Length: 468
Image (cartoon, rainbow, N blue to C red; front, top):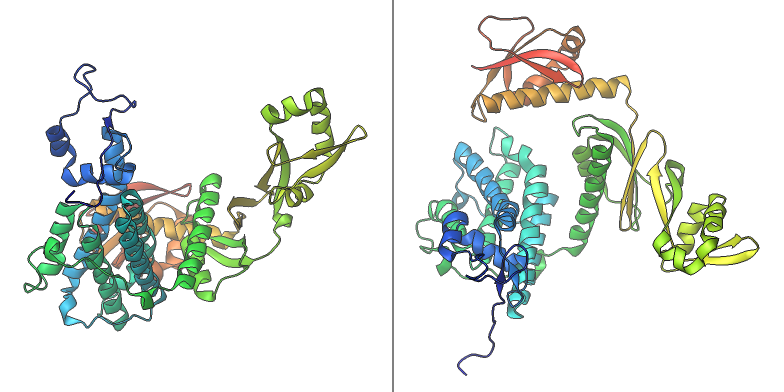
């Protein structure tokens, strides 16, 4: 045969797992799908959904969801770069690509090279879906961690070395990534390539599909850095879940968080990241967080019932006097927790009983894998006032956006109607002005302003903005 390996595609099924056929009337025309979702979105769905040789369910919601999560996120990162590069007239050819000293830059470059290495290996072994999912995971971290954490570097007015390094890092990542993703989403990567590469360098190959496939640089891969950043990211995710559970906005500062995990601690840099992302004043690392957590038992009756029958109620009574903390230690790693039930020893497993954990009063708790976090949810006057300030800034930014202002536009800020918030604003005026580009502030009703009545954490305030 003129080939060494052959990949055969599985059947395309409908939403409910039925084979598409004219008899069932569930056939989707390929042209209809391509015209509705686009060629790249359709291709990506098949690449990322399941192994190509397995049956695949094809329906609109699934295609749109994968398109949104991967292609939409990648496009947002690209749009972010283009927006600020246009404002600053940034051309990557005017700056020498060199290794940045910024830890976030080193991390994303390490992640990129690890990704290229992984995808290269997977494609050599026909692991197409694994490659697609690895790329999707990378784009999520690029957008929701790297760009989020580095936006302020692009907002600086002057082209400092640090700002140039941020631009060059994001450009290098995008340029290499679109070459990596080109066989998967050929049209989208071509459009990005033409805009950020060919527009800046007309001597570059005329198409991304005529470029060499990217290769990884082992010297740029720092697994220790990647592992530490992953712990920090997981801690932030857990902290956000605690806030959501308690219905506390991220804009509301909190006093402290306690984190517990296998490694025990993180360098100061990651502490600053976590504090900034979760808007907390203090981060503590502790091996033992029992003082903040309330433990309990949850009996698995479908498992325990057939094993112990009428003894189950007595097991429940015995567990009321048992220590969930000791039980958790005994059950760890597949062990057994032994209790006395009416003079007989009963050995329980993790299949029989689950150890439940929740924060004690005033504390929120979340855990995942080996990482546990506790968030102090108590608010004092200073924290509440700072929460007001951040909420006011957020509302001003929303008004700027709704008014169609450009990122760099200077504004006048108007407000009236709340004595408490008037004092908070005046006490923090310089910070509010710098964060919102407000050159002028009016603290009384003005006829030229069109006001909106906002809810600021339970307080009402009339606010307006105008471009200067």
